[in-house]
Image 1: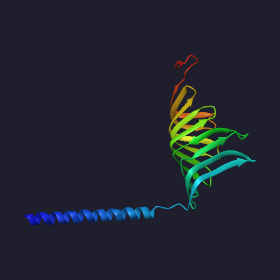
Image 2: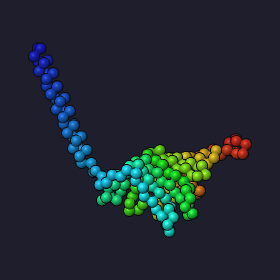
Image 3: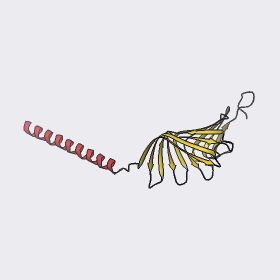
Amino acid sequence: MHRRISWLCCVLLFGLMLSACSSDTTEELASSNEKSPDEVFTDFVTLESDSGLVQWKLSAPRANRYSKEKLVLLENPVIEFFSAEGELQTTLVSQSGEYSEETRDMLAFGNVQVESVDGDKLETDSLFWNNKLDKILSESFVKLTRGKDVITGRGLECDPNLNSVDIKRDVRAIIIDERGEIAQ
């Protein structure tokens, strides 16, 4: 009886070791099949200008470039948007981003915040910067704070300066009047 238990323990131990080896091998194969970037940048910066004036500047402490896809994956990207006169208007920050070298569009995700020099603040979990349209777009939940007023909803289209903001659906607003009371 004692031999049977010892033999059974050996078989179980061997089975566990074999399964551990095979899962390590599977993980190694999966990670070796992931595409590595063609280039890795630190202190990445690119900008868009017109007639010598910067329209926007994109920077990130780290960026991975995939040449074939014309895609740059960004860590902690920051986009600064400038007026036609070259003055800073708004700053967008997020945890991650994807920048298209072909269209010059960017997808920002992870604690996305856009803040204007006037103090307006847009918060969401993801948004899309369409360079050709010069628009910020999102289908996610958004929160816009202007002074003491707060507007929330789902879906958004706005200019990069947060001057013209269209929240698409489920819109709720808390408007504070001059006396500091919620307006009815």
